[in-house]
Length: 291
Image (cartoon, rainbow, N blue to C red; front, side, top):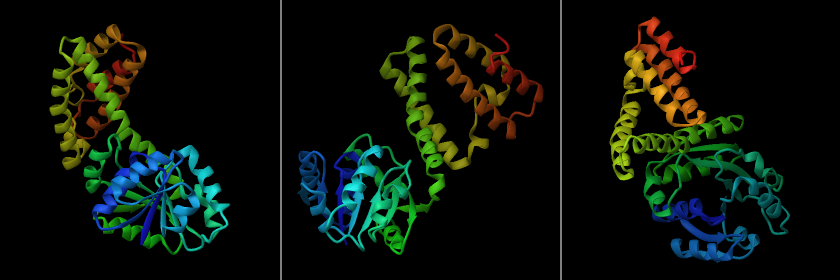
């Protein structure tokens, strides 16, 4: 099976290299910027195409790896082509959108699917290495569904089926587990720097602590992994945290701390924090009722 890409950004480059390394045939890339297609082609030992029609005719399965807002337009342009499309498989890699975005191609007799790796593509080279541990979600209908699933399993990756109606919530979860972790780490680093720790030292401290917490929650679950003042019922410590943050930062960062604290409180109450009175006091502090 020949695999082609429309779009030549970080995702398609990394995924193409990954597929190539696992024995799959990459026919090439087409992109709005031909230079990007040429770069991706060099990286995968494939070809660069100037027209969508050329990549479609040279591939059995085409991955559409363009920004979400461009998927529908690309789909419309392909569906308007005069060449034979029936039997082709088209897959977009958006985490937020369903295969409904490819409806025009479905009407032309194509298999249409959405496939998304739960992975942050910040750097192409690093992403290629990290893809081996990525878990994919697959959604769509048609007789070619198993072909797409077998492609992922043939790479050595796990794949889960997801319903079209759940893609938005799924993507919100992905953003929370990735983008917002970056935001939380940045917030923690800001507090450490305000406390007199230089940036390098701040990230060294956060690295060990965060990696340990993540390892624990993945192995033991949230109920057994939660630690810190909220899980212990240290009312005074939580109050001092709130006062210090309110004194130093704007209300948005205070709200962030409070929101995470409320979630930590809910987790703690399930197993570790049995003192109802202390839990109620902490909740009031986090709600801003004790300032």
